[in-house]
Image (cartoon, one colour):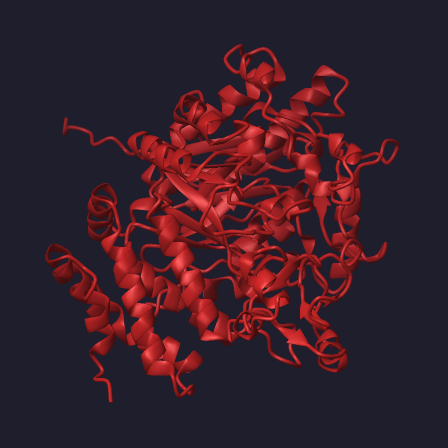
Length: 628
């Protein structure tokens, strides 16, 4: 019978002597959570203890392979676990091929990122993807190699070293829920390997899939209806939540957890410092439920976090859980069992856009009120746009009794067909009917009215709307992430309609190639691109010097006489005052004097806000007077 310490012995066995003390110390700190969570998932299996020992030995080998520079960084970040939650952190998200053509081209953009103040770069999927349709790279065919069209593993190692030297952490997607149907595991399953077939959810007929379908929703009801695909090579139905060529992994099989743990640590050893854990809500299936946010999914993530904390405590896990606000905090775990370091605040993003459409901050105020304080060493991730659609259904809790109809109206506003009265130019995404809202697509500048602007005033208002949303993301208390091209006001790219492998997916509207001609105008202060870029830079620079804008600093919303105005107070000395309407508004400031962060003017009493206008205000400190 193996002793309870045998997993530690197996972990330490592959390690050189100089790493063993740290490994043992870290393991002791994580042991209770690790054994409890893995035991709850797999402990009923007769082979659990041998499997656990094998897992820890493989983890030890990956620990031993970690480069000295990464080990040093691990030690520094372990000593300051909230390093990523300061107001100086700024993210940027881009596709490799759209931003720099390949990994070497991305390295050539580091100067632009540093000028913006970026400290965190999320490169969307760059590992070898499925041949043909690949869901923008999210159908991964290999976790071990860079897509040849984008470079090599050597290019990745060079890029991570260059970014690290520039003070920028590289974030990579780790697609946990599924692999491509031409991944080696899927190919092995189709070839008859019974062990690899157990990596997936497969069924001989429709009986069980039909039972699941009664309660499971559809992610892409138009492009990929249903959740199961018949695979002739298997003569079985395979669970495919997203697209037929993306096979869901079966985490009830411990071999899957071990394989994905190895994939994560292998990428961490290549210099990846943050993992965006894709589709975390879908990881565990349970009949009679919507198969989202199940307790076992959280156990899986907590075990993964514990292993990362042992091997690479300098690495962050980020939950891509696009779920309603009440379900978000669970992805941070607890003090006793931490889960992800960062979680997307998609409700905040969607509510910001909703405030523009409705010219009311009602949804936004409800989302902020429902956002709990952060646990230690954690952060929300705030953003204005990303590669994906704006999913309105995350706001159903806040949208009221007529929520679906209300959100559908907002979605129609952002579809913005000419003649509709809307300034937005976007596209509906996967709506199952006219009275339901699934998502909206489009670049931020197009959705905010810059693309449709034909007059100086319309352009001015569009720029103000963009600054409102970015100002919210920058001041909310989160790690804010800019989406590629938004700093320059890049607009929609319709070229995807000419490509059969993309034409069915309007998310390609917001995936244009980076526009160097606009980049050249970023300092001119006259063009729309230049004005937007310089204004964003000013906000970013101001944020960096304001500790009240760190992720964990307190936040509250002050009452206003009109729902058009959001008064977001951070601590007691910083106020983001934003008018989300096309009409001038007034707001009475809290007692005392407030300094305008933008121009240095001092304000008190009642202030006016022009249409779509934002003020960043700092409370003036009372000067101590010398006695007469």
